[in-house]
Length: 500
Length: 99
Image 1 (cartoon, each protein chain N blue to C red):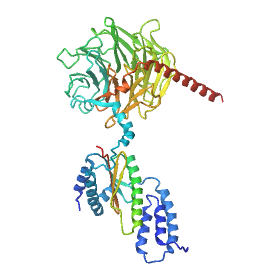
Image 2 (image 1 turned 135 degrees about the vertical axis):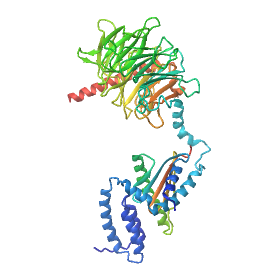
Image 3 (image 1 turned 60 degrees about the vertical axis):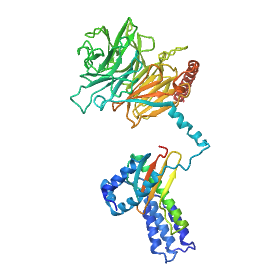
Image 4 (image 1 turned 45 degrees about the vertical axis):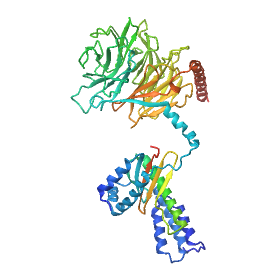
């Protein structure tokens, strides 16, 4: 088909070029080639060919909507070709010259552009990396399984690690005590044991002792007064103690009356006297409804309570339980999560108003949920993460602040008095390793997090975020009222929808 | 003309230059053939910059058919993207100039 057109060559070409979509360069090159060849020929056949090419365009467009990939061989072939060498020689030369130019032609002396960047600078002022603790020999290739700050010496931090698959001759369980006060990059104390350490804690009323719960079910006690790196006391590996991994250890009570509580994943809870670990003082099977043993992965005691506590299990459910009394064992079950519960934290910021009935839980289902012991339905759902949330902890000083870490390397700080939809501060760790644990320092000003590469990172939190003002508690009361109202509204709507 | 080992060395030198976030080499069809960024980012950059370079080149040539595009530099608030075009390939370097 021949059609006549009075258009000149150039506009027709432009038309083709602008209509050609990326990836359809075959036709662009064809046009260019034709242009060169047919420079002296009529403009007339051109439009016809254009429309035919346009049809081919569209077909190619449809084929190439999916990004084309080249195989490695094709890529290597291209990279080795002469044309590529020539191009690269020229291109890299220019690029390197341009890269070395450091002049910022856009600098604004009036400072007006800094207003835009204020958001960014503020983010930096919110959380800054203070220290990174890692040991070539003992922490590399291991995952940080637990962190705890010393109650007596606020600069000491114990981190426990699991086994190093690359070093089968090294002990499977390692616990290192790191010191924030000095610039030394090696651990203050190094402890081992034969099985991977899954949880660790400073013994609250014994400044020299560190307790570790291991994968084999043994509880080990390390003493920094001894010269040994191995444990000074160990619980027996028998049915009277634990035979399953112990993910939770905690010293609860007062100076004169305290116990070490440990729970293993078969639901067995033992309480021990730190002077004698050869047998538990007391043990209890945590079963739900007389049949289902609870596979406990996390545990938390509310502030000031030594009898009632909350546990989270592998199947995503949360339970309240109590240690003593006629109803010792599991009391209530909460709606829970859609995946294993990875972290639990009870509200611990003491102040004019008591929020100790609140607790938060983190789970593999990408969410953090806020609960109250007074109700089995969650108060609020925090869905900002796109990966497994591995741990969560309330700030020890600020009533509305908590931190959570997830598998994409993000450490988020949520201030519920500011915003319940998004975190108030967020930082991504360099290299985005999965962050397994998060622990606020007792001062509430620093936050430590352990990752899957064996590194412990300590962040300083900006004053504006972590220091509570006097009215934070009353503001939090209002926030909770709002949350409760929204929850009830949400439930009503859901109920209406069901009826409709 | 550079032997192959020097290509690798040069790419490495560019990549480790202060502030460089990523380096991508794209062929004439917009398909990335070497990259230091992750796949989805690379595909996005390669596609978009390829389109832009084609448009820039056609702009230059429409104004003056004897002229041709030699270098394209996009300065944004956060980054600087440099594109060294050629008949067959594109070399894209993304730099954060404030570092």
